[in-house]
Image 1: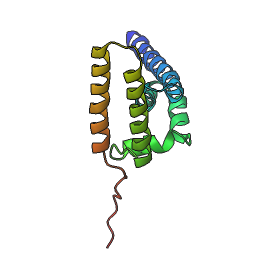
Image 2 (image 1 turned 30 degrees about the vertical axis):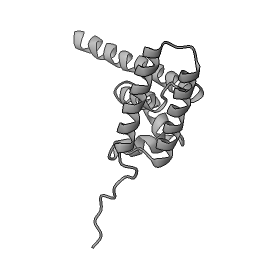
Image 3 (image 1 turned 120 degrees about the horizontal axis):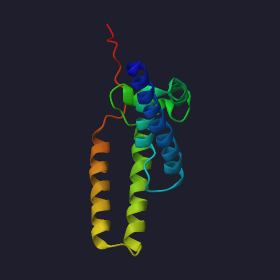
Image 4 (image 1 turned 45 degrees about the vertical axis):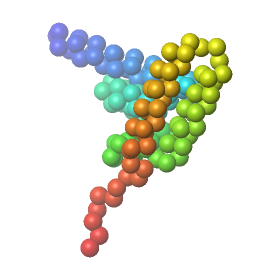
Length: 134
């Protein structure tokens, strides 16, 4: 009995994470500086454990499906996504430079973007073909 309650509690916890991260991903599409891809990946992970319906929606969606497929098959980030992310980071860095924000906050934000930029461009751009030709 306790085990069943525990499983339902975990499932509810994963569902809440999935819904919140999906909402944040939609916000991230509209607001520069908020990452959408990371929230989609978090939603995919949590929905695989708690909500098959959301998981199917993400994998079958024309916007998120290819990205999730690439990530599952070699942690691939497409060149288009890399370029869009890089432009978004540069736009956010420019906004930070020209806003009245504390210099230390600007330094840490841009440092974080730089680390993310280096990591992102170190990822492969295409899913490797697993079948060998004769």
